[in-house]
Length: 96
Length: 482
Image 1 (cartoon, chains in turn blue, purple):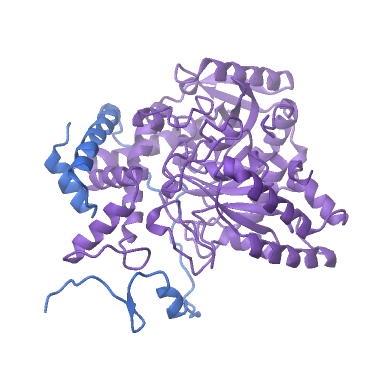
Image 2 (cartoon, chains in turn green, yellow; image 1 turned 90 degrees about the vertical axis):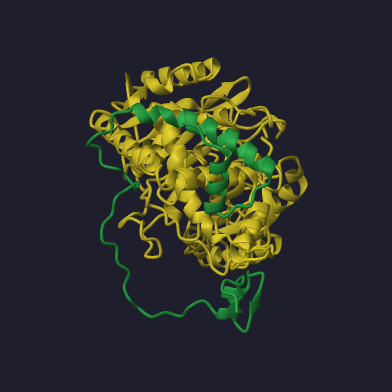
């Protein structure tokens, strides 16, 4: 299976990565090389094997619902590039 | 010289009042200031705060009631969140990020009076095999400064190897503690997944990441593993009763210890001289009474593929939070998607972008079943294979790395670099505890001996490692440059 430049562009958009044409070409090559190596598991018989999403499986982990002092607002905002009136400023999503 | 001592030896001197906590901390700060220009192991040195902590530690020591690591300087991989201390993940996207909270593992060390001496260099977001992917330059191996220390916790490995700190913490997702430990000639230990809280560790691949110690010897590694482990309600994958008990550490013996070498980790991928050093080490252990047998674990052959699907898939999701809104700089463009994409495209490094792309592709509609789902099935197969082997064996052993430290820039084939994780990946897949112990030199460079055991066998693996380390001796441990 090989991945086209348009597919690379599509994946970059899904991943929210703006890439230059040079980067797109470079990633196309690297992705195709990796996907080539990934072929090895395509022929492996895994029928009936349950997928293992966790290293050590746990079930029903609950946290006690206790109110606690949250992070002070100014500390939560401290690392943001743009804040106003105690809020994060996000890029405009809905036009007026 | 204080820098040559183990943490346990320094602790004894602190207890005997032969030296003060401030003197110990100052001596390591001085060494970092003088020597780290050769290595680039530290991204931030906590000079002022470390001295304050040292004086507080001294009060605890004077009161007589203190933990063995009280007053001991410890270097922290810069993906561990430290309140009010910059935490960069060696990425430009977090270049000026100052966390408002501290990782549980680090908090535990603060609470017992250990000194956070500085934050160490790493591959950006812990993604790399040689520590050449840092946005702030590569780390240099003290055994040969033209060589790589291994990644991704290269700075933490070098901090201990070059005696810039007696102990350090790293994180291990596919070998990122054990691999650099092997290449730098120190002990590196990845505990069972869930025994050390991941709270405050900047997430790379959440189902694989685990924090663990680097040390000069097994005793020190065990001390640090004991101090950072234990159940944490802030990490939902944290195991109950998970503190690592080291009271019987020195009771281990090699007689009757059942060790297995998988032939899949003993093939042509392993450098012949590395193999020779490993075989001599095995002969040594057999003479001391260990039973060593060969076995086959065929799913190991699929480990690298499985890892390079699962880890990037989880990473692509974890790294979605870096969009320029809550952390880091923002590149403003027309439209929000364009702003996010420009910020991420500009500030992530090439390897991080590649892995995000791989992960996004593997999770995308139409490819999920062929890649991500199937990789998780192979992960299940591999874990079951190891668990079956543990019915007749105590530990699986192998060289930690197929090669000795490579030259910086020496391996340009991306897949060849990724394949170096061959020996270390299975432990992360199964959540198994795994340790690398120096076992000799090939080409005058360190070779690591890896043991991997069943889930929750951390105490046993540390005990066996203590006995194994005694059998190996430690004449070859210091880099000649020191």
